[in-house]
Image (cartoon, rainbow, N blue to C red):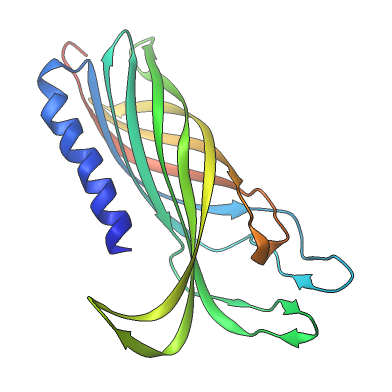
Length: 203
């Protein structure tokens, strides 16, 4: 989580540095869930579903050239879940937490003053944290083992400005996860509603 937070912090610092030339800078906090195919089996191994749970999303984007810009977000599951897969007839019952993160090119527009929309595409990852029940110390101390998977990402949202520059934003995201072997190589979708604020001139 520290590595992801660091990378997301870098993106936000770059965004703040470019704000002077920006058309718009958005920051938001959201809550949502993940939808994925049901539990499955390939004849030898069984795989649970990645669906469900409450996810918190921290996101930011900056538009600086003809409504184009970049952004990033991180979405950890609020609570741990129980992984109940079976590999080669050995049952695995272990607490885990998925974390999705992505960095995107963004195109955004405002229209009719009260509304705006964004589409985005980029890369990111799925960090599956399996909790071990004991702590291991190196540079830092952790009580989990991570299984990281590279992911492509596409997403879209609709902003409604309910008070000044403050907005509420329903959004949808799709992750193309490489080698998502713990979940039978499924590609999950994430749906959320965020509340945020747009820093922009003349709106």
